[in-house]
Image (cartoon, rainbow, N blue to C red; front, side, top):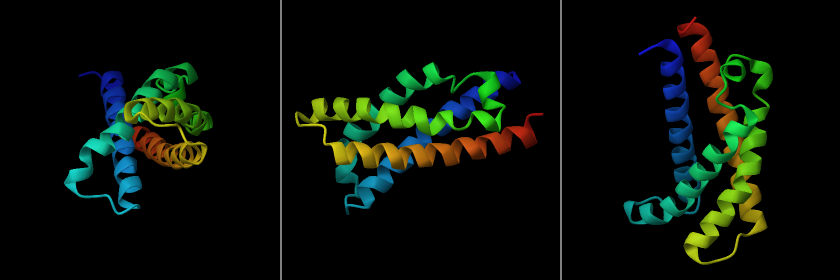
Length: 131
């Protein structure tokens, strides 16, 4: 596997894992962390994943130049903050409910922070291991 493919597969896998972990943390913060809540977690995880992978490419989140530049990391939280409303609407549709503004704000800000931390760590990793 070449270095570019390896970098992107690690990046995409890390994005998915980060979203999954943050989804779990969100549910755990409400006391809903046992296995019986997995289907409900899916109604948050899948819309967020969909929103992220639909909007992130528009911000160049997976472009080689962006991945290699710490100056471009600001795009990550911005993309997630804009993906959150889409995810919230998709989630509301799955649950046949409404997209609550406060939920959307908390979802977007926590995921934006978490993705920024993950992407910053990824930058450090690729700088040291994939020269």
